[in-house]
Picture (spheres, helix red, strand yellow):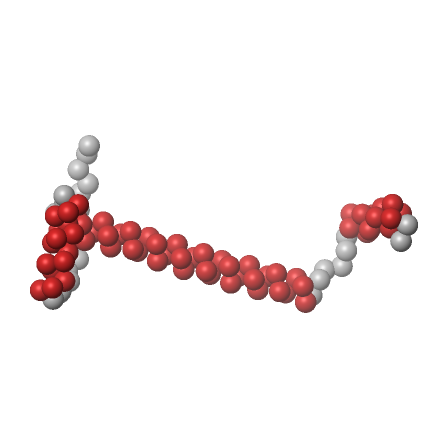
Amino acid sequence: MPQILRQERLEARVTSDQKRLIERAAQLRGTSVTDFVVTMAQAAATETIKDFETLHLRDQAREVFIHALLNPPEPNDAAKAAAARYKERTGQ
């Protein structure tokens, strides 16, 4: 498996308790503290971005939906023909 060239650096100050906790978790995973921290931070970042983008798209879609309800477009020829067929078939 090819090695990934790591060129960037992150630094963080943590408490002794936090460091021990992270070291223990890394040990349980069988990885280094650095790999553990990077993997967990990347997973959290990916999830945060996904959640934000999903919520943003939902908000955007909601706005489009509400606008369409409050300001419906005029029916096109296909919609008018479908309505006419419906009325003809149901006798309304």
